[in-house]
Length: 399
Picture 1 (cartoon, rainbow, N blue to C red):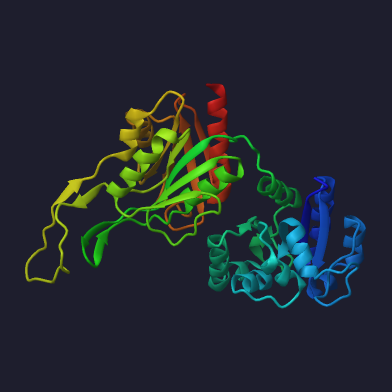
Picture 2 (picture 1 turned 90 degrees about the horizontal axis):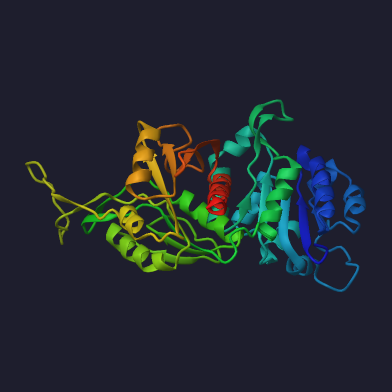
C-alpha cells in the first residue's frame, strides 16, 4: 500500500485525539499518510503527534512555505487515493456541502477527484439538527461517503448519537473504498431501486413512499466490491453512484422493459424497487376537474416483474427480492420467496421505527432458499448493503 496516499483531515473537536489512532492504523495498513489539521484541531492535539505517527510534515496553513515546489492543496489532492476526515465537524461538512474552500483542508477536498469519507463526531443535538442532516444528504447524493457516528455518552455530558465511530471501523471502511473486497470481480449486477409512477392525468400520479436509498446503497456497495452494476431506478432525488450504468424509468411497464433487456446479462439480480401493482386503465389527457359526484377510476393489474424473471432465471443466476410488509413478515416473505423462484429475500416491517421508507436506516430479516433466517439489527442502509452482499457471496459459494 505504500504507493497509495491517504490524506487524513483532522478537525476541531474533543474526538481529535482519536485521529492519532486512526493515523497509526492507516500507517500500519501500509498507507502513506499525509495529515491536514485545521486551526481548531491543533488546539486539541499537537501537530507534532501526527508528524511523529505519519513520518511527515502536517499541513496547517494554506500559505505555509512547502518543502517542495507545489501548490500544496492541489498536490496533495492529486496524490491522494482517498481523503478521510476523522473526526469531521459540522463545520467542515457544511462547508463542503456548499462549496466553501477557505482553508487547507476544505480546499484540498474541493480539488480532489478521489473518494472522500467523513466520520462525523459532535453533540447529539448538532448531529440531529435538520440543517446538518440536509448537508449530509446533499453530500451523499453527490457521492461522498460517511462512517456513521455511534450512540453513547458524549464528552459534553449528553447521551445519544454523535460519538466518533471506532478507529478500526473507520479504517476498515476506508479499505473497502480503496481496494474493495473483490469478491464480486467479473460479476454483473442488475439492481432496481425507487418507486414507479403511474399517471392519472397530466398533473397527478399513483406512487409510493420509496426513496430509492436501499437500491442505490446496494449499487454502491456492489460496485466497490468489484461488480459491474446496472442500476434501473424510478424517480428519486438521488445521484447514481459514479461508475454504475444507470437506466432511468418512470412507470412499472418501463421498468419491466428495462429489466427484461438487462436480465440475460446479469449474474446477480436484486429487485429493491417498490413498483406499483396497479395502473389506471385510462389516463386523462386533461387535468381531472372536481365534480359534484364521486370519482371512479378503473385500475389494471401491472405485470409482476419479479415473478416473470423468476420464471426466466437460469441455474447460474442469483435472484434476490424484497418484501416490505406491515404484518406477518416472515410468513409473507417465505410465500414470496417460493412463489417467485427467489434465491433470497430481504424482508422488513415498514411500520417499525427507522425501518420504513424515506429514512437512512433499515432493520431486516434475510431468508434464503435453505430456510435459514438471518436477522439484522437497525443499521444504515449502506452498512446493511454489505451484509446483504455477504449473504449472497456465502450462498453462491455453497452452491
